[in-house]
Image 1 (spheres, rainbow, N blue to C red):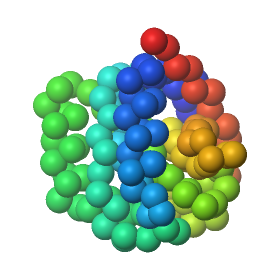
Image 2: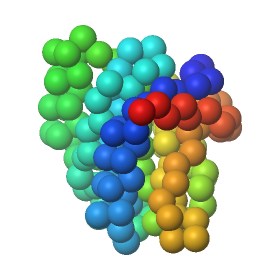
Image 3: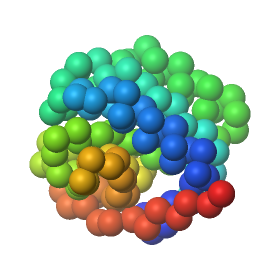
Image 4: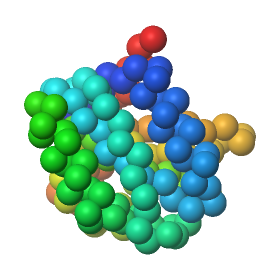
Length: 134
């Protein structure tokens, strides 16, 4: 279980912009890196085209997984947004979590996009600290 995820300001801003651009639909994407350090962000298309659910398009996900492997990185996170929802995983998010990675949930608070990180395991979620460096 990862307890702290390290990101750059650039990675953070890329995800924030993606969430804002896709609203009112949920945005989604992948985080690649080593151990708990994000080295690449892959904004993906939400094949569900929904404000309440996300599903990464299968071919795009496969291509991203191949690219991640080619770079010698690992999948270490998945992000998605709750444009009008809570700032934590929904029951659906918990039930459908398939990968042992950090899950970032983007939401709006007072009109500003923010994210929280979570580890989902055994039908429960635990908060993960997000450390943003310049």
